[in-house]
Structure formats: structure tokens, C-alpha cells
Image 1: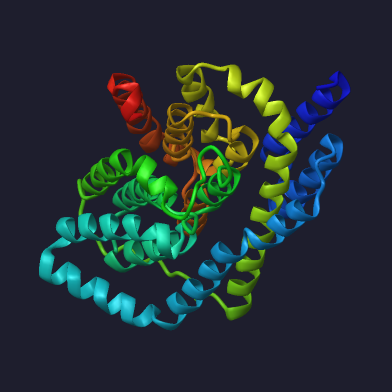
Image 2: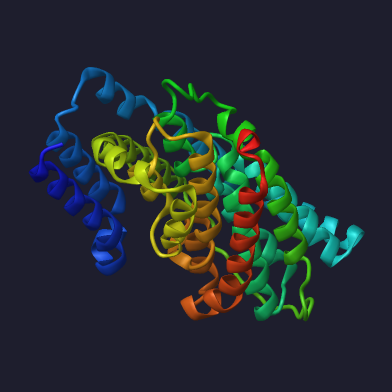
Length: 348
């Protein structure tokens, strides 16, 4: 690969990873920004084709429709959802209800999408009227769990959509259930753990009132359109960066891939996946990379879409989030690392 191309793609990666974190206007228009960078990356490497254009236009359709349909359904059935939450809490008790809600929501997030799951999580916490400390705790544990559960299908979140898309050809031939088969044995215990952790609240209810605004149909449609543009951008971005990833990321051992992707705590994990995943990777490398991205994405607010949604609605500050999320998240990441290394390569 010519040196000028390498330098140009490296600059694009730096812009994609750090400019949204440093410049507020770029963060607000992230989808359009990444789309421009994706077009630039594909142009630099000269991999434009009719097939790529079609892929960029069709790959985002399923997740965008899921976000739209589920968003409209959530808006329509919001009152019934609130009634169900209150009824379940009265019948089961507060802590068992929290455990069941988080567990079910996280496993369903791979179908209803992480975005809708995050909105439902906000509704659950607001309806239960927890103390401020418990609210922050349940939100953070819930976002960890949703981040894990949503990766199981391409509908769950942009990360799983782009990974499935990039690995759809040989040798992996990734289909709808590829990530489920690859990761379920790691994901399900993690979801159970975070659901149980969420239920370990300290203060219980103290009638803290949090009013969540009703989303308009226009807002729901705009969100679905943004998801479409975001995934289309990642398709182009990932394709353009594949040649660079093949001569850099591919050379790293699995343990280095794992800990290097702890940077997902401050950078969007879907963007990192688009930049790093290449078809030539082994299942071992893909598992190390994805588990690191998913878990570390819960460390800080910018790491994952559910974090951003929930932190915004409950006005959770970065310090509040980090105080609860970082110690436990780092411990979970270490446990996963040990498990991945102890498992025989044939089973990884």
C-alpha cells in the first residue's frame, strides 16, 4: 500500500475518532461527518463500485426500520408500559422487578434495538421513582446489559450491523445469527450479572419525580433517518479502511487487540468496529475485539448510544457515571479476558 494512502487513511481515522470528542458541532452532526469521511476513505483507496454503493444504500434499511417501528410502538403503548411496570413492581417487589426488567430488556434489545431498549429503561427507572443514587446505578448497570445484549443480531445496534456486513463474505459468511452463535456463551452470563447488579440498590424508593417528555412522531422519524445515515457511513468508512486494517490491526496479537480497544470508553464502538474488523480475522481475534468494545463501551458516557440517551434524560454527569461504571466495568473486562485466554482456541 503506497505511503501517501497510509498517511491519508491514518488522518481520516484520527479525525473520525477524536474530532467528535473534541468538537461539539461535529458530535451533533456525527452521522453526516462520518459519511463524508467514509466517502473520502473509499475514494483514497479507490474501491468504489456499484456493489459498494448498493450495500451502503441497503445495509442500514433493517435497523433503521426497526428503530422507526419500535419507536412508534413505544410511543403508542407508553401508557400501557407504565401500567405494566407499576403492576410488576407491586406483585414481584422492587428488586426482583428490576432484575427481571433489565434481563428481559437486554435480551430483547437485539430485536427492538439498543436505542428503544434505552428509552424503555429510562421509562422503567422514572416509573419506579428511585433515589438519585439508585437511579444512576440502575441506569448504568442497565446500559452495560443492553450494550451486551444488543450485539447478538444485526438489528440490535450499529456495531452489530456493521460487523455482520463486513463479515458477510468469505471466510465467515456472516448471516443474521452469526454474532449470536459466536458470542452468546459470553453475552448471556454478562447480561445476567449486570441485571443482578442493577437489583442491588441501596436506598429503594423515595418518590423522586423524573418527568420524561413524550417524543413526537417527527423526532422518531428523524432518529431513524440518522441511524440510516450512520450505518451507511460506517459501511463506506469500514470498506475504505480495510486495506490499512489488514496491514496494521491484523498483525496485533489477540491480547493487544483486547486492551487497545478499551479506548471504546471514550470513542463510539461502532466506529471502532468499522475501522478495525476485516474478513481475514480469525474468530478468536473477532471475539477478543468485540468483547473489549462492548464492555469498555459502558465505562463512560460517550462509549455507547444507550449511555448517551439515558445520561441525557436523567442529567447524569460524567463523574457520576465514571464513579460507578469504571471500577466494576474494569473488573468485568479483566474477567472476560481471563475466560477468553483460558478457553481452548478451538472453542474461541
